[in-house]
Amino acid sequence: MLASILKSQSLIGLFFAYLYSAGCLFFLLFQFGSNQNYDLLYSHWAFSWAQDQSYLLSIISTLVFAAAAIFARVRSGETRKLITSGNLTMVLFSAFVLTQSSSVFARVDVTVAMFTSILMLLLIQRVAKSESVGTELFHSGMLLGGSTLFVGQAIVLTVPVIVAFSIFRTRNWREWTVLVLGVVMSALFLVMVAIWFPDPVTEFQRVIQSGWTGSFSITTPNLGHLFLLPVILVTLGSMFIETTTGTISERNHSVTQITWILAVLAMVLLLGLGWQEGLLMAGFSIVISATKALQKIERWWLADLILACTLAAPFLSNLWRL
Image (cartoon, rainbow, N blue to C red):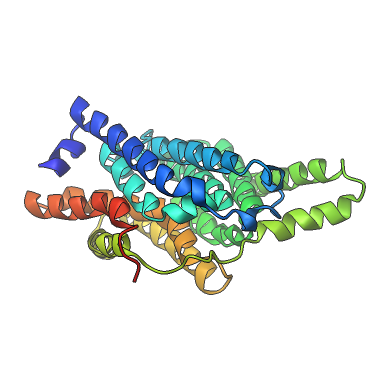
């Protein structure tokens, strides 16, 4: 019943999506946001200014997550086929991301990188049916470079970006040049910031080094992660089915999501990114597939059960750590 309401375009579904996302955010913010240890961020080029005003980092995290949750339900052009239910995607995204509430509120750098990667994924999905993709390529390059400035490990996302554009249509070297120019623009922004310091070379190195995030100290799973398992299993099954028996469009989109998740997995296993931060970076790709998987479940009670477990996960995340 709940899944059906969220899948529909009704006002009730829209109201519930925003109410749940906001309620879950502020419930966890009051529990965790004021007690976080921000020491890891005080050496970061973008947040070192907040050493004496750490409460501002919680505010920034809240605003960035709110923007990410809103953009998670954006459906335009080709994304209408990919994200057919914006309300369902929004609540799944909120539940999945806020189950990692310690990371959301304590690692603003990862939260910002997550937001920019969401924008990049949405742009990538638009190129499938576009006549001209120059704008999408340039902006995707800028977002990729921006993500890397906040989380250095995000450079690995270059691989799924190249795979996605190759699959959807881009085989012209001029278009690839536009993508590279977008990345270069992010580097030019960094140079413009560094040049105002007495030693620009040292400042440039500091920005690059501080953006390479270390593993977060709180890495133990909790009860909320157990409640996320049903939707993760359903999502993986849906991805496998679409890559083997789906339409060409479904296969292309599934390959894009799988490549993205594998890139984040490499960031965690090979480059030292914390696994909860990895879940944030891969969250939108997982949620997109989860939305499609829940919509295809014919037994409404099973869809509601999986959805209920997912929505309960953030509230249960602080009850028990394994």
